[in-house]
Length: 414
Image (tube, rainbow, N blue to C red):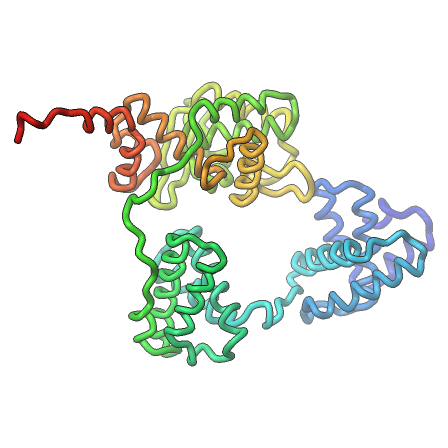
């Protein structure tokens, strides 16, 4: 690999004779496969050589503190070599490259300070997966919420056994002070209740802790399901009718969200084997239904996906259909999809919604089907709801029918 990057014998010899030659070469090949440019690989090679000289034996594990020290020395070296240096950017880029390399090798070690009570979180994750059989999205959400609490708690106490209800109430109050809505705080309280039930079963805390956790009151169906108008959805899709690679990819994803009402995770995890081109069918994994749901593949959407695959999608071994277009090539994530949709909606000045993003398009799909005269049962089946109660809230957006009820003369019935 080094002979591709360097032609001068002295430079080539320096890279080949430095420690961790195989580890550095394997990572550079990996980056090459991810689509990184030749100039970027040169930068990576120089930075990894510096790390290898400073940490000749990283197999024992490397922490962020160690990398920060080396990054500071690297910044000084760049200045000494009379390179124009943006100190902050150079340091951050160096740390990012080194951390990616060490994680690729399995040598990266998270510091205990950055992950307080990490063993408790991991035990809880394993229990949720093996004993409760929860969906991976639910496990990730609960683990993230628990880590928020433990980060907050670790700044005040060092032992989980000393936790009390006042601590939990104070944390939930701090979430409200940061602007979290009542529903988010109630979800956080539910996660903490589940964790402390498990913690009590392990003898870590008192069983009274979980029993005393109370979240804020949230009334069922108190809010309308907000989504853009169907006219705004049409404008959103029409804005991507260009030959831009990003527009071609984003149009296919947006149509899946708006027309099928798919969730962001269902779009980001869509794989080649999920589309049956011969029979014009598309299937998605429904995490909440614990199964798969199949739809007829609409020609307009099928053509958009085909165009993306043929003209835009980078060559990759990933089976996920939608990938990033810049290195490192990787499957699209739910968070990345949220940012794409939010940015495009804001660009079209679709700002009157309380929440922008993929899920608002799912609401727009349901509202449009209501306006077209579909029953709540049909809409629930289309959206993959587990029960009719999840679809019932959309009756509140059927304003024409609600007006008919409001104007109905009940005088003769009393």
